[in-house]
Image 1 (tube, one colour):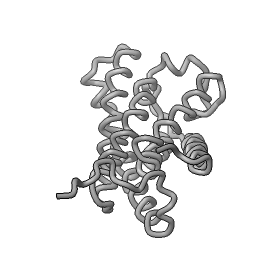
Image 2 (image 1 turned 90 degrees about the horizontal axis):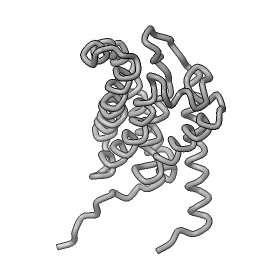
Image 3 (image 1 turned 120 degrees about the horizontal axis):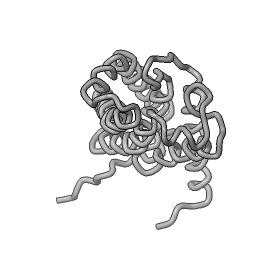
Image 4 (image 1 turned 180 degrees about the horizontal axis):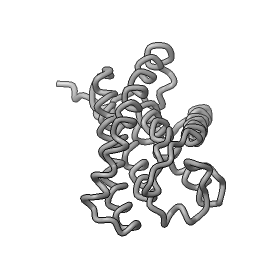
Length: 193
């Protein structure tokens, strides 16, 4: 079954809206030593995964990264250009792509609940992003992995606040406008006996 042009347009609109949201949230920046600032962009990444799901959310991240690659200042602090793809934050950006897929999969493996949304945002939006970001940051900066991981603990309180905010927003959105969700069907459909 193919999507209708209307469905395709709606999906493209969702991708564009979340790409724009991620970019706008990147203007909220708290610089830290080590080259990786605290930003609001990860909140946008969490929301994209929660709302758009595992099939559509990666496209919103791809749009942001493509805009950055062509030199537009769409990343935290107005950064862009190919240089960001060899800097200390590149692992985190790769983690965004994998993270939104994980968020979407966790949220859609069962019935929607606030706690499933929170777990999805925590696992995909924090743990997965850190799993990619910390080793690459250590490699690029030449700082040992254990010290890089330790210094990354400075981000954890802010990330937990973002998980809470993303959960509250998505629960309210689910109640107020369930059609905002790109694919409200679970990824795994129950098998009829």
